[in-house]
Image 1 (cartoon, rainbow, N blue to C red):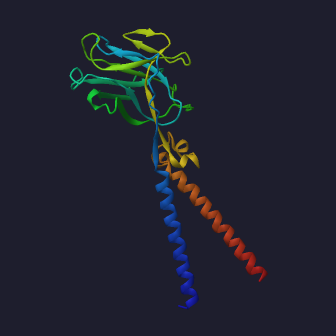
Image 2: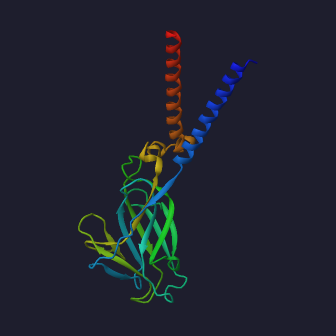
Image 3: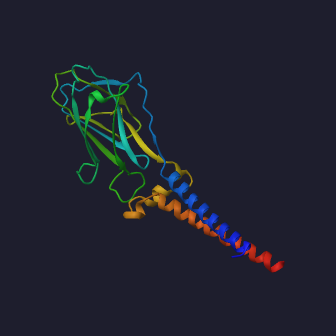
Length: 238
């Protein structure tokens, strides 16, 4: 084999290796996610909500972005009254099927810095025609406690939205439970909406990095085609 043929083969291997490394980098970057949430600071008009004597809390809230992956509650508790206290939590669509999207138990003692958090698989509701509504209903079933005892949640004045807070079937007008939604954000979505493209699709089509790889393959093929055309043009004019 001539030196020229050997060099051509080496260059070909290098190009394939570079393309493979590029594909691995694109796949890795498109799997990186971050969490977005803002724990709301307490306001002067907030009202304490002791859980003692309350049996059920219901709160509606609207998903404003795709991929809701958790919710957090500010909570204040007395260690003795909250020892080993679990609060069953249910999350479902406010309209449509009554089936739970999330069914968990909150351990009050698991609160960190006065905030108790529950995480779950992504729920998508914003601007998605495949679901009945973007409004969710949060239901907390409170264990039996003495009146005005136990952990304390926070209710806030809210005149801006249609969200509602219900205690034991009684609606509290213009009040909402202080709840912080936690959303998952994929880094690559700022360049290409791969999460939206994959959402709701079965199997491999529901894997967001696939669409990043397809875009990478398209750009790579386009680049190779342009390089070949340029080479052919130079050879013709040489």
